[in-house]
Length: 196
Image 1 (tube, helix red, strand yellow):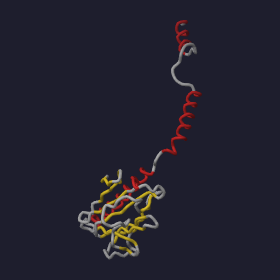
Image 2 (cartoon, rainbow, N blue to C red):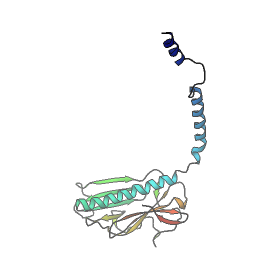
Image 3 (tube, rainbow, N blue to C red):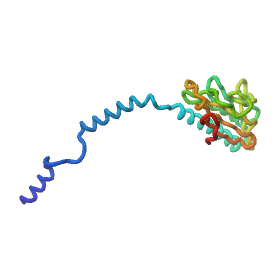
Image 4 (cartoon, helix red, strand yellow):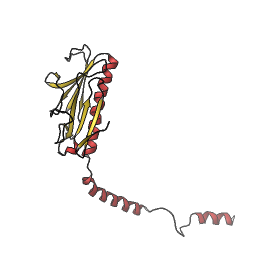
């Protein structure tokens, strides 16, 4: 009985080294990490991540519009408002190019800090316009995806950062007319490279 009592008391003894950290040590480490993060946070360049995210979002909306045109069997018109920074997707059920009360529309807003335009990078086409489509829906430049999977015209949409005017932050989205394929382009070191 005495041997059993001794083994229990030895198990909970405070003598000798123990493994682990005290709460005070963990708190000090957390405070030091917080101070380092406070100094490092302003040095992070989130504009490139923001631009990459924006180009993927716009490309995804365009691909979904093309897919909807094929699946639903009618045109889908994507109008682009450069000033308000959004895309309006119009499911044109009667293929007349006009928005009717019975037809669905959706607006996809560009992300924070992103706008249509270029910050000085070279163009991918002879046109220097931010949006190269010539078709209009109302007063807005537009692109129509047809039920056969094609687009009304080939063209480009340029995106850039609103505040950081660096050509390396420029992105472009290209639409191929015959297949309505969407290509994404990033400006790396002064030349365009396809990314998606």
